[in-house]
Length: 144
Ligand SMILES: [Fe+2]
Image (cartoon, rainbow, N blue to C red; front, side, top):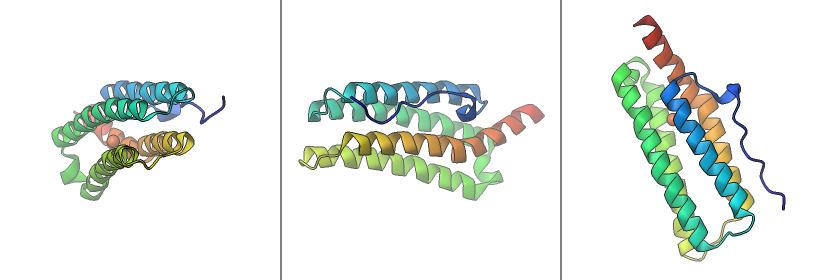
């Protein structure tokens, strides 16, 4: 059964900040695993499980990034970028919760739409938003 392609980890999505990349790899694996298993089972119980797993790890990951922002003074140096970054984290969490609540209320989501959103969000966020933060952190560490 074909479906959305898995995310392939490669250097173009590596930020170069070790702890961020390690967590991104886990997020990518979580999404790919959900994508692979979803071909056979897209029941409510399954979606509850993946939204739970994904959300708890994503929240932990967002916390790690937000602690790094604090530690290196990202908000002071680059307020608009920091604000936009935090907003994207909140909106991702909100969307995952909304999908789960919709499913609970009997409003289904297609597998391609769910995986498309999740994969698309992660790649976009990494390439556009985390890369900016990573460049800032690396400059701070390099110059430290
Ligand atoms: Fe982020």
